[in-house]
Amino acid sequence: MDVLNLVLLVFEACLYFGLLVCLLHWRARLGIGVMMTVLGVMHFLETYLAARFYVMTPFGMASPGSILFYSGKLVMILMIYIREDAATVRQLIYGLLGGNTICLLFAFVLRLHTGLGLAPGAMPDTDFLDQMGVLMVWGTALLYIESIGVILLYEALGRWMGRSPAPRLWLASVLALIFDQIGFYAVLRLLYDAPISVFWASLTGKCFFAFVYAVLAAFYFRFFASGAATAKRFPADVFADLTYRERYDALLARSGVDTLTGVKNRGRLEEVGPGLIQHHMETSAALSLLIADVDHFKQINDRFGHLQGDAVLRAIAEALKSGLRNDVDQLFRFGGEEFLILMPGIGHDAALRAAERLRLRVEAQVTAGGAPVSVSIGVASAPAGGDTLRALIDTADQGLYRAKANGRNQVDGVPRTA
Image (cartoon, rainbow, N blue to C red):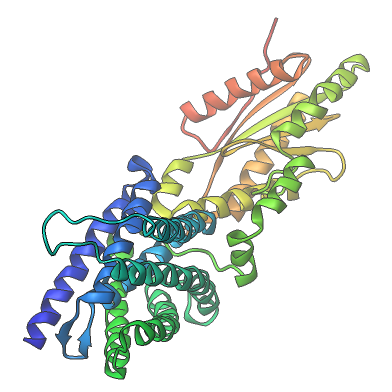
């Protein structure tokens, strides 16, 4: 019977992982909120099973709610982080914490009613409701701490375990689950006088199923999400994403800086661009405008994940900035994967040559999954290409469209004639 229960639990783990990873894999079509809602709904089942439903396993008496579903939830949170980012994970963590706290609040208020049963002897079990509420909120509080901790551990382990996600995922999960078992068992002991054997059986089971999920994750990364490993990041950066990142982003946005790449944003372009172009028109000085667009950027996001896509955008911004004249040329993130460059004092032929140098610089310096990343660039120069910011953008955009249509990874900038 012990072995049969273990076989059933492994099957359930594979089913659980398969269903959840499908929602994760199809998040671009369904939305990540679908997976988050499923994880939130499953939290009640996890808590109920941990309080009332135990089976005998080779590890001892343990609850599927703890060793199977809770371990799976922690792994899924880490996989959301790997495939998305820390800010997305935070929505799930705060949602669970807030939702379960609200449940406990209303469970307390509902006790003010005189409850009636549908049949004789079927009166509401308010004591169980109280205990479930305590377990749900305490379990979610632990999950909040562990979700931050497992991400920090995952990143820290990458310094000496390499970039392969599955081994890091398993070890980070095991360390977080040890902390969880200590905290959750303390409440089980208080409420139900749970024996110490339950502690060791659950801890062993959690570590075992963390390994099962890591093997399944390795299969997923290998065959369905090639290149899913995130770039190494300092743990402090992840913690900032999970807590106070928006305040920093808001400050940068007010100062005209794009929060992802660190270059000027589109709002700053609209502030300084028209005046700069008007000045050059009045003085008959040369000025050129370049629009660079990342080739096949959607495929980079779909194949490697949004974190890698963000890393590519930052690397391209650095490559472009390093090829510009300091304090003269101005680089802006125009939107999405597009960058705009204003080059005062540069005529059309010189702008085409500068654009080609920038294109080659990006191709040489920026990679995704080991393959070079390229950009297509459209060029417009005043006054032939336009005498206002909007007109120059339109002309450069036409050149960019031709560069894309002709095969990408090239420069196009035929001056507009009257």
